[in-house]
Image (tube, rainbow, N blue to C red; front, top):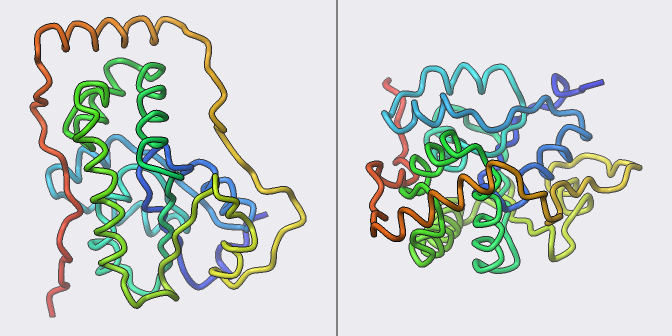
Length: 229
């Protein structure tokens, strides 16, 4: 049973996808938070700087991870003060990129490419690996700079480096559960189905045509929006 009504704050996962966001979501659910995850409609809203549906969603849950939350944490922090933010990371930028590339081959070709274009500016990470590495490192730098001096509000974790219940529960001031820590999607190789074939064909075609420029710009973390007084 969720005890999220008894916890006086919400928790926002602000790590990019393929940094262990699902693991964070499962961990927070075990701790009693009511969670929500990736939402393409909200990601599209964010690209147009529309926040009404995002704010409604935030009012309905107490834990958040995956898109669009990593892109708009300053906006969230401004409108919903007093909450917690957790940045999930990988052991290296290269490990993250490798995971993102594998993941891109197994997603729905249309939906996956649309999401990545909105979030990263490219339909596939294979089209510009260097740009994605820069996006990853810049995201970490900006989060660290934004939350500098706010250790009570901000935590950085890396599951590959052994972080788990102790670190999260100390940060959230909650007791450590008896359950094992829920590592999800731990790099297991997925079967190569139709999506894999279609995505591989799309990547090959785009590379051959040198069509690596997306029609969508990378959405940077937006500046703080101050409430009208």
